[in-house]
Image 1 (cartoon, helix red, strand yellow):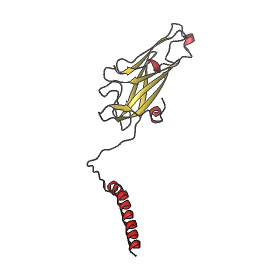
Image 2 (cartoon, one colour):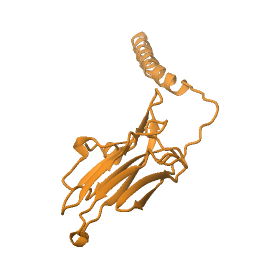
Image 3 (spheres, one colour):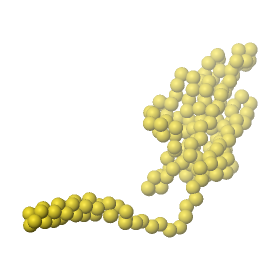
Length: 183
């Protein structure tokens, strides 16, 4: 009987030891707590409005944030190149930039970088200021004879991206290509 009792006690002790070894990390997991106070509103509604005013043959492009959250803006200009005797130049002043890799055979992508917020448009804010220095200007010069000018158009496509801020407060755009892992 002594052998059976020692064996039973040994099995019970080994089982308890295994239970304690496994239970301590699980207990720590379930008893770990964190607390927070205050509140932060999260707004997911973003939208923009693009205005293409004409001044003669020139297009004056202004983008306005119509949503409830911060946005960043790209504008794609399709057909904004010189052809058929028409000279086209784009002036972004210091508020817009067009990296050379974004210039294709028939289009250009301009990114808004102006304002006081590193290119971020706050709700209700516009890329145009009182002086007009933040307007993207597509300057078109046509020949005197407008007969070849009939099939000429510059298409403006606006892209609006919601903004997120990193730990240092720097703004970044949630672009679809970055979200989907594309380059």
